[in-house]
Each structure stands twice: as structure tokens, then as C-alpha cells.
Length: 259
Image 1 (cartoon, rainbow, N blue to C red):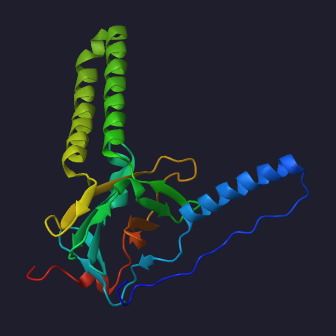
Image 2 (tube, helix red, strand yellow):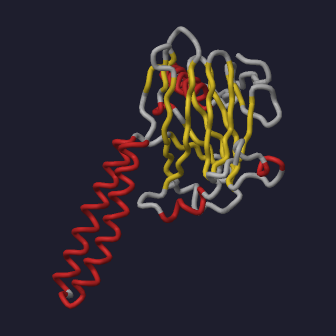
Image 3 (spheres, rainbow, N blue to C red):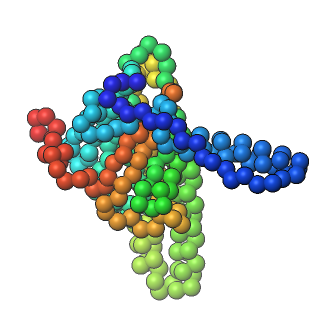
């Protein structure tokens, strides 16, 4: 693990004691096993955690004229960069699906192999009961978009049959909504991060990762929102805490060289 990246100790949850029969004992053992597995899955500060922090060695921060903020973290033979649109929150409610998108890139300089598993990525929403959303698979997103396409098409056809005088208006609205759905589907198909094996021959991977904001505990997003992105890579959990929009300060004055 590279210098300047924080590591944290493991927390162990306690379980209240109670009297039990032999059958209850077996049940307790099963429950404890599930709790141990659950604790390992949600532990945010266990061994092997590498956390981005402004000003630390191997951690970089840059605001670009393209509207994105770039967070860079290097450790061992790997460099990871997170890019977040500074207007991301404003775009969420206008998407065909309400979800947050971030751009992640990996650059490997070693001679071995590193597996990139998007399905293990997670985003914690700190201001919303610390809800943790796992990354949406592109296939799942495309399935939801297709479902919405079929649903709004059927609804429009029913309304037109009931009110034929509104056919032109209804079909125009349908066309606009289908255009949004089609554009999002195309973007997900071509730009989403795919599972990859990084090695000397194929040292890099990048793409967009999406997280749903549909949850009973999330509600409406209000700026500023605070997040923690977690990326399991090799034997480490890479953490990027970030805020949207980012904090105003010197970071906003750092532009791409030459611009």
C-alpha cells in the first residue's frame, strides 16, 4: 500500500447474551455466522482500506474546465481516478432513470493481473441514513429502460384510443420520452465500465458506473450531498469521499494545464 493512504482497524459488533435451549443455540450460531458475514460486507474501516484525502501523498485533486472534478489515488502498482460532474445532482431528476453516474478509470503498472469487478462497487449516501447502493449492472439498466419504453408506449396507445382528438399531442410527447430512453440506453451500452482483467498487455480500463437513487430512505437529493465511493480492488477497498457540488476553495482554481 502506497505512502499517504490511510488504513483503519477492524470494528467488531457485540451481540447481547440471552438464555437458550439446544435448538436455540443452533439458531444463535447460525445468526452469529450471518452477522459476521454481514459485518465483513459493510465494514468501512477494515484492514486494506485505502482512502483518498486531500493533501496526502499519492492523492490528487483537480477541477477541470470540462465541468468535472478529478480525484486521483495511487497505491502499489495501481492508479485510480474518479471523475464527478459538478452538476451531477441537477441532472439526476431529468434522467430517464433516477440514478447517479460517476466516471472511474484504472491504470495498472505491474506485471501481474488485477481484476476489476464493477458489481462489487458501492456508493454510500451519507446524508440519507447512510444508505449504501451497489452499482447497477448495465444489463439491469437496459432492462429497466426497455420496461419503461414498453410501459409508456402502451399508456400512450390507450390514451389515444380513448381520446383520438389528442393523438398528435400524445404521440409528440411519446416521441420525446422515447428519445430520452433511447439515448440513455445507447450511452449505457457504449460507455459503462465493463469487468476487466488488467495486466501488462491491457493495463487500463475506464467507464461510467451508475447507482440508483430509488430507495425509501433516500428521498430527494439536495446540494450539497456527501458520498463515499468504495471500489474493492485486489486485497484493498479503495474509498473516495466526495461532495456534490464540491467545496468552494483552492480546488476550484486548479484547471487542466494549458487551459
